[in-house]
Length: 166
Image 1 (cartoon, helix red, strand yellow):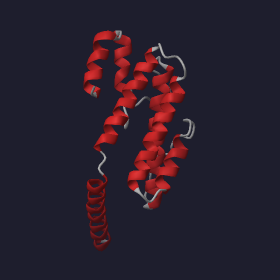
Image 2: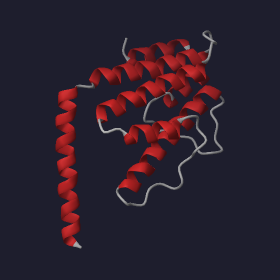
Image 3: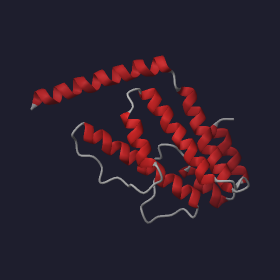
Image 4: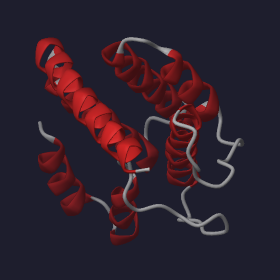
């Protein structure tokens, strides 16, 4: 079953309030919450806060490495998000870093969901895990490394152009 098929099932069987929370159950969220904003679901709030903290910490690490201004001080309070960002950033192999990040996400979802298998949180957790599985199916080591090298070369060329303009 694909993520989209599962979302359709959710639309049919969840209450309107619970279905509205599905938009937050994504990896690399486009929709985030403000610091004082809450969805009404502890699971969803924790997930959004963790993903946001992870991405902001990773962005800060990348900006620091490039000696650029990064985002404002990233949050340090989401469980293990900062540690996962640091560990993934330190890895030399991008594929292993991505796999590590997704294993950490999977573990975080399990920890947040707990043992309550009959709550709507289990549905939210399943949706996130389904996305992680679909994402993993897209990984192809050879294609990924080739794309990484091409992207890296393009970044280095652009960097040289900027330095030559100074």
